[in-house]
Image 1 (tube, rainbow, N blue to C red):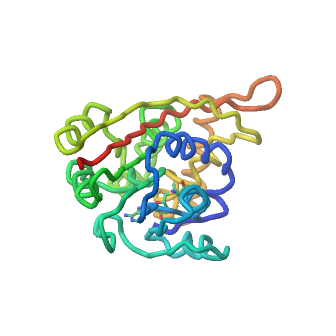
Image 2: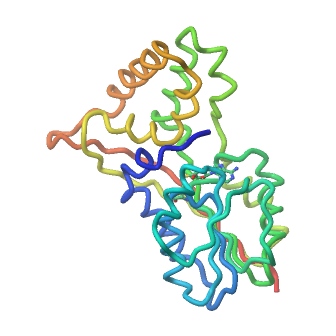
Length: 256
Ligand SMILES: C[S@@+](CC[C@H](N)C(=O)[O-])C[C@H]1O[C@@H](n2cnc3c(N)ncnc32)[C@H](O)[C@@H]1O
């Protein structure tokens, strides 16, 4: 799926906070190899590079658009184009970090063990994924898919529940690692602008659906989704919109 770095970065601050919350929970003194899986425009990868000065830092992504934005700013980070599902580090990794990316990959029951197997002894797998798929932002998307002539075309692209519940990740990872910390946080993002939840989802989950439609259906689909979303997330008296957004965090430490 083509990514739009500008659209994605429109909410850079609220999108950054969970990455920092995840980073704060990683206990890794002097890692040699740190990889940011699904690094996007690299704003978080640069923070990883600042934290671990001595480490080799790799930023991995499958999107040429995102990698082009990432590498536009000079840094010591090694950018690499690869699909996380098949990527392997050059040597066992001390930190595998992934913020808001693994929800785009299927088969978490095999993906997560595969990532753990790429860790060095005592290495850390740290993952954050949106877990907001029960909320109106995503449920309305599924309803809108079913509500028009586009249903048969969009249904296969609408990944309704790409992230599992916490128990699933516990069951998959606990037998494989030394320690496991899983938690969820619901952020209350305060957004500005007209119907900003639509702007937010246009940078991520809505993209594959819009990209699959031609005009005028694309505009019709967007108008229908926007109309429904406006009812679910009305602005407050000060004109700002509250957007509750649940995210799951996983920090797994490999055995020694
Ligand atoms: C929502 S962005 C997050 C970017 C960055 N981690 C951040 O926190 O700002 C998701 C990124 O994952 C990348 N991605 C999605 N599926 C991928 C895959 N199978 N392999 C590599 N990268 C992937 C996308 O290209 C995109 O840049």
